[in-house]
Amino acid sequence: MNAHKLGLNLISADVNHVSLERRTTELVIQGEISLKNKVESEISTGLDFLDHMLDQVRFAGCFNLRLKMGSTKKKLSHTICEDSGIMLGNLVLNLFKQRKDKVGVNGYGFSVRVMDESRSRVCLSVEGRSNSFIELPKCLEDADHVEDVLNRDMVAFFEGFAQGCRATVHVQIERASDPHHAWEAACRALGDCIRETLRENSWKIGQIGGIKGTLD
Image (cartoon, rainbow, N blue to C red; front, side, top):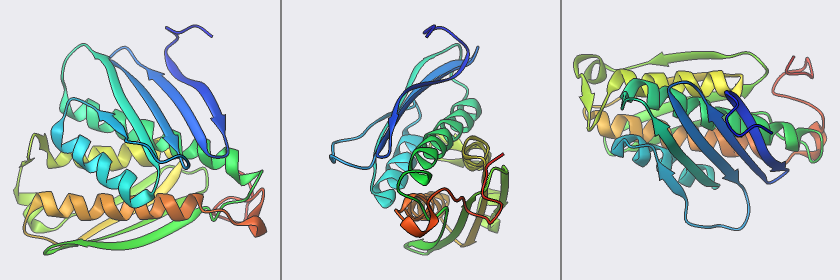
């Protein structure tokens, strides 16, 4: 394999682990997801808030996560957030493919999570179609920033996840007054959905989130 080839490169994979590298002309991302052998995760995107949110996702999802930016031409927060979402989505999709034909998986997940005053609802279904529907409360529509990223960058993260995972993702931040809390509740719920999507279900061996039976 050419280490400098653009696009997504599969490094290794089995039913509990996937390692990927994604190269574009803008940046390089190395990612790894593992369901076993709990270890300290390594998350380094260059954006503190995004690192914190990815840590929320992996903690709620009960998986180990390594996601590291190898290099960038420029530190563009929108690109970093979107591409981090794409990488996380690709990790989940590739682990989904490994598990669905060998142990079977649920293929979908649903969660409502809170963080103080904020409440977020997330639904996820892996069916081969990339859709994202995101509803924000007024506090997020009125505010530009949440810590060191834009609120629009976090929308791009969820959109990127749906793209990478070839999944339909619904995010409803139902109430909030603090943007930090709002996105934290949403990322906790996303982690729950990933955990339920990948949960072993022998009744569904070979199946996806819908009855068509294929991601293609």
